[in-house]
Image (cartoon, rainbow, N blue to C red):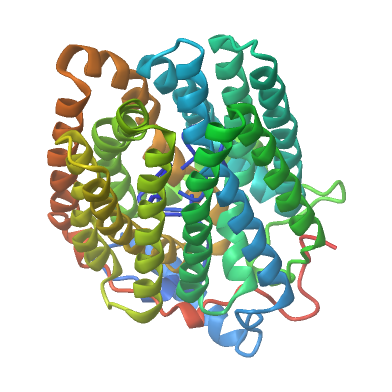
Length: 490
């Protein structure tokens, strides 16, 4: 995922869950989207069995020439664009509110890490099942339902913080419920982007820019709300963003899937085949792609040793030493960097996307390094800009690779395995952040994370199937079928 201030995208964007209560998906983890462009996969990247299937997908593309998805800025893509942007606005406010709110009530870095880990653990543990559900039912309706659940949980958190009755296990329980909702929501993102835009990379870049622009405002607004009101106000604002996201998705109409790429559907509205069989098929497709599971394996190290401890420790270190407004500035700087990375991803179209993304990922070292070294606020902000640009570029490269290399009929499930594998170690890293900081000091832990953040892209580049994977043409990815195609949503 590629990530944002509050989270990475699995090895590639779209979306890990926010540290607490956020919408996973947006964040450094490989994320959103399918595609039928598997016909151009290389022999190094795929086993022979997968190549045969890719050839069939290439033929299907030729047969469906002219049935392209709508242009990028259609009404429906604009609605999805707004939904993702407003959700990110709320999500990037949460780390500030959570750190400041728990610190005000006598809790420390360990409590902040546990609260964040409760969301990540539920999300990572259940997202695989969410992927199967997304392939069997209406993804749009599932996403709307998940947003409404999180509207309720964040409203409850706001009441608790407003009342001053803050108990850690209750906050963790709310975070866990948000993680479950996110596990249902996130797989649907994977299959939505390519159905709404013909140019998958441009769509991913535009969404990343929107999310990052929202991230510029989110932490700063959260800092002001915490400083002049209370953390409860931030939770209330976050609940409102889920309401607006749900409204946009309610108005959204997805184009029909082509018959060849649609799973068989019963009259009851779900796909044929057993739940277990769908789960096994998704795993088989996942493990058949060396470049895919190779990235996820490396990302486990990233989660446990880099992103997991960085999120809570940066939050607590900056808030304790410089105040919540300073943390808002640093987090906004990370958002500014991801805007830059998003624009670079719109302009640059490397032939080997994962190699280019891994090279950009070296820049992330400056985020934990500047905070761990105890530099000034402006130095931390500058490091965050550079780190955000590298992380965002990697995120778009990863998301687009998954969407254009994976067959559409298994994409939600593969995306779910991708997300689960990417994030499996994040709650471990978050939970260990407090004890590690107590033992070694928060600054030293962050410096270790900075060193390991250099090892991760080096490991990615060391795998031939990852660095040598040739891109599939995103404009050749056909998601919508002729009028006679099977619609997923009315």
